[in-house]
Length: 316
Image (cartoon, rainbow, N blue to C red; front, side, top):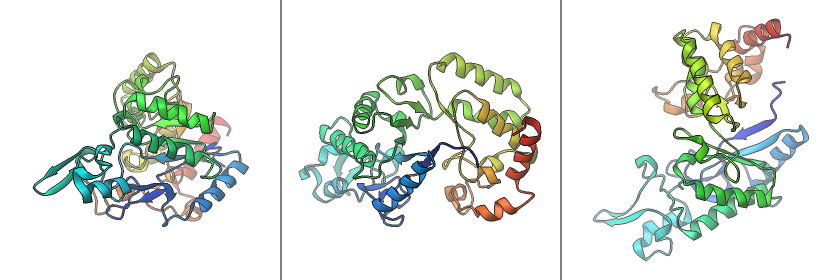
């Protein structure tokens, strides 16, 4: 009903017990048992393919969790571990410490200069695209901006060897997107530099901001096809972000859909789901389950109203 052609799923790999949020990988070749098995995922992918929908999965290749076999070995054996150079590790009076992503000790950063690390991650990238894996169609690559373009060039080759027409989309929060997106690199990146203006211009009635960001995007990235969004699992939901969502959601959605690039709709936004960080649930507030039948049956639901307005204005 939405006309989507790609389903983007969050991280599905087996996760560590310490955190368990999916971005702390314990095993790059297994589905987390809370979600099912690889056979479960294959059935989901097959069903999507039958509807002409491609499937991409969130790949966390910048860091692991502490339950990953190599991290466990380093924590137990210290510098005697054969995997010592897989991470940025040091021995202290308190024991072995692994440098974590943005200081999070539960997310030890991988050393992408290590040939064995690179081979391990290339194997994982190929495996999930293979018939023996889940036959997925591509990756959304977590914190891709923190990993060298040389690594992504090699990863791109490995993935395209397995599936020539796969899609590789990097999470790019800052910097020049052209360093990571382009021929022999990634196909696209998350367009954070444009996304803010899609909602803040409405809150502030500052349409010069929106016009400026559109022009900047065209001037800098005219040769790229970037991924645009109003929200995601890390961001305040758009219906909680807008100061007047009843009046402005349809305008924000129109800007998203009609912008250059690929529009990405975060689940629940289409039915008015709300959620903001800072409360007792933290970031989980943006990731709650959505009662879709109830939302679609609600005549006052935000998305229902937006769709009716869209239909009247644009004949959809």
